[in-house]
Length: 275
Image (cartoon, rainbow, N blue to C red; front, side):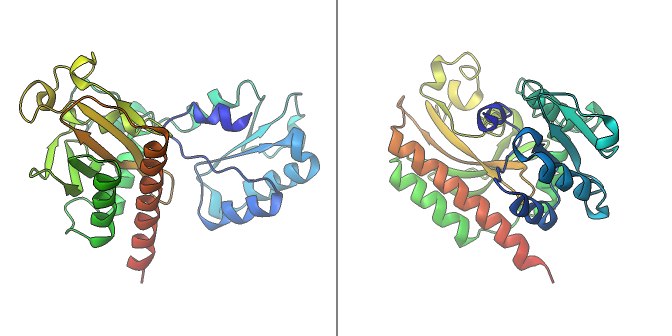
């Protein structure tokens, strides 16, 4: 049930753990934005987990949610823990992971959607150190595989900054960047899965896009998010074609796996950069 609920929150990267020990290790290994505990399922061990995590100074910026159908007496929960029912937990997490509006003032004006956590996402892009960095074989291999496996003339690893869509890796495209407002990936970073447009020219959101209405006349797009170690969507692995088409089930799985590999490489790159 929780997988289905959280799948609807496109700007987060949820991790589901089925025992208290694994949850404690995961939360302690890298501070998450939110820890939600199913108290109906885990009962006393889950409550003890919340009590321990909520008092850990290393998790001072983490939000905590106790999920239970029935009301829990406030004295049984640490002050930092919010209560939510299974019906309201998705709404609660949306609120906890949304930035104040002032954090996104730097984003260029454009007719494209922004993630509720866009300010935090942009900070993650800056922290990654990927933008304007030299080409790297680890990412070029992924876009090469994407182009070949999905039979696409163009494959990209994109990063979304306030002003630009910058290509960390590219196959079949000469330009190194586009204005942020041109980016189909503005929609991809709002997904937990694949964002696919079978015919860009016929889609109301993209028909007037300069890259669709004019040269190079893109017609097809499919992308999957690339995440940093904290679960922020930095950009995507995507493929583009000059003709309308669609991905089959196997191709969709391939794109998702390649994006997951790219996310792992982003994490490994960060680990290797640490002294």
